[in-house]
Length: 488
Image (cartoon, rainbow, N blue to C red; front, side, top):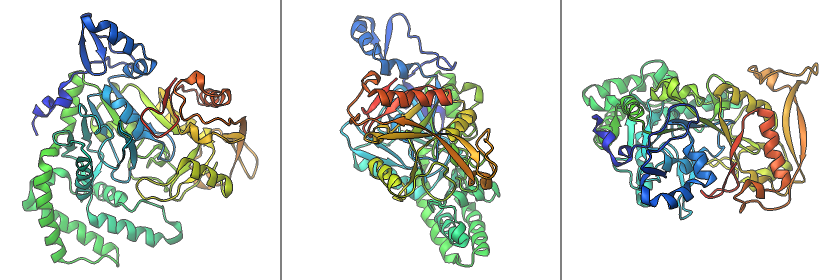
């Protein structure tokens, strides 16, 4: 696709901003910045009234290229913040992962949308959505998601670009994912079985197929045959025939025709957009504690959901990245297997799960719940260099007589304090968590929209988190809707 893509209505509106961290955009003297429109000087009085809003000030101060990343084990509520910020950005880009992500957002009428691969800026007509080279694309699922959006009145035509360098995830990868989990038996990872790991494995072993291969159907079948043969040789339960290959090739010929308008050299598009001073919001999938390098390996995802994945997953330089917002729940959850130091078992965990409706967007699995782990959060802040945090689901803690923060770890055997989050799972599984106990609050805070109106105990909880991790909390979620957000 040519650079004419940048003239698409979403990309054409220039939201110029300084590229330095947190430096606000300064409008020309004859105009006043209002959302992403230019307001003539005679309208300055009304426009300034809008800009005086703390929420508008907070959002407009974000750097030209900003990011929203998970800072726990996923499911923190990243999609909602991306949806809220998207109107102030020209482009929202996914840099890694696939349909294993589950981002739940609501439109202005309160209608719920569960997104998996399509970026969470899609509900805003002026926003171009980009799926970068670091993502993996299950084409049937991608089209299913688009069809679902369009059937609910969300236009996707000309609004989504898919990198020609992104790898294709086939149904065979999903089959292999299930076979691999069954093979591991009691040591299973607890994947979504969406084929993410096997697809990244194909990428790393260099026999994967990329989106650009759909433009060369004359060789597509031969390359796909290698994948089928490899799976059949590795797993006894994988059944393969040349008839299956022929059917899959014919199927992808049809997909190729439909996908062509979406395909672009997104590395070029994004870098040209940066040169044109357009604003880009990066949306991470999963979270740092599931990072292939920094997470609780091997109970992790197969990509890099931390800050480094932005550069490798989009093809943009580190120096252009400004503000990074870490999204963290007011407590902790995780899906699947793996260590969870602050996990609450039994009735206490059930209370949080029920109050927070903690069931996976992608799988529907009940999430494991526990207190907020400050040790893990500080570790994530160190890795990503967050400029601010979005504390979500604070309302879920309402009604608890006391709330605990896991502030440090001691080794169970010798009682020695650990200085950092351990990479060794044997060590992690033997830690004793030291808790700080704070008073709870009784009142329902879901209708509160000003920080000063929160109960004193709730404000103390937020401020104690800031003190412990050394990063300010700028956004506080008190409910699922777009408006259920406090700007601090």
